[in-house]
Image 1 (cartoon, one colour):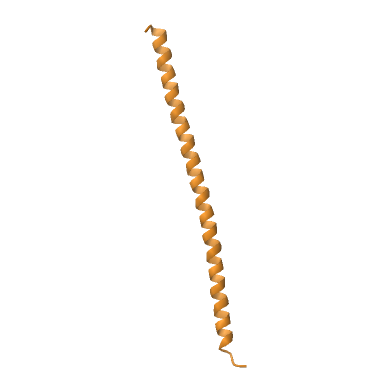
Image 2 (cartoon, one colour; image 1 turned 90 degrees about the vertical axis):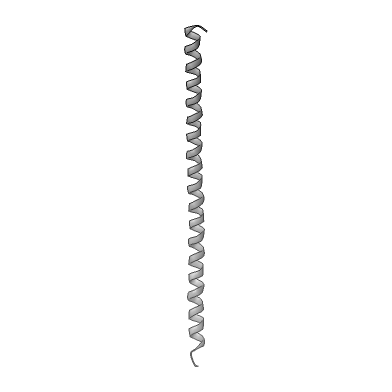
Length: 71
């Protein structure tokens, strides 16, 4: 190969490697963002369920204490 062809092939290979790495980084960022969104959804669901359970516990205590009163 002559010098011009070698430079072109080398430059093309370097560019291709750069784009492959860049695409990998973009996909990794998207994957991390998706994991964060799913984690937030799970946290929100757990928070709602915890609030629900605390409300049931409070309601149970009120009903139990009302049952011990004499009329």
